[in-house]
Length: 286
Image (tube, rainbow, N blue to C red):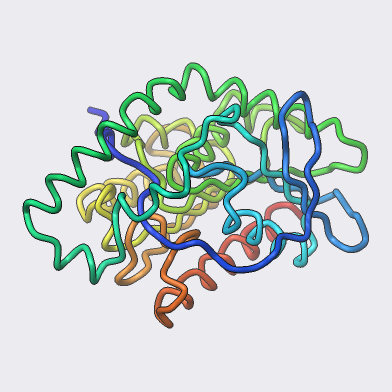
């Protein structure tokens, strides 16, 4: 039986990262897109970033794309929300840093939950899979035809984390050379169904999960591990030779993109999650 995870909320927590993005904005296949390129302009290793609910203009995701570009990848962040991302002002309403969350009263948590539901419920309906998945897959297909592009990876965060997993499924990926994506990396994905979302995955998949994620508990993480291990042996779903699941201690939902920049532990986790993705794509997009 499939287990639906995090259906009432997603992409929760964090702070805005300081810094000025270095990339440019372009129109690709009719979609506004942030583009970060390495100094030599090489596009042979390309990564599509699938954002959380706060969208493609959030400084955090653009600055992270810049870091991937500095590591030799061309990075694209398409506006897959069609101009309808959740406003950054909502960041502190949703899941707060762990220390704050642990001190909240029942009344505070109830009030916050009601506001989250009222905001995210309608948004998730508007941006449901039947609407968004074709947008994402069409964008990836278009990127494949950009001159100089060779292999393509996809990275997703929170809401976008699930769509990174879906992009790694057959028949979109893994069916033929030059189609879909060659590898995927999902950071604290939300709204996932276990095992349904993972069984069809056919290309190398890396996962970064926090052990304090309110949307993916210990039970769900254990189920994901079991599915991924079974896929390696060919005992479940599409056989998947290469995958990894890394658990980050004391990290909550959204940690890889919107952790607390004032916390040394959070900064280290963000740095490690970035390193995890870069190493994964260097291996599988070579």
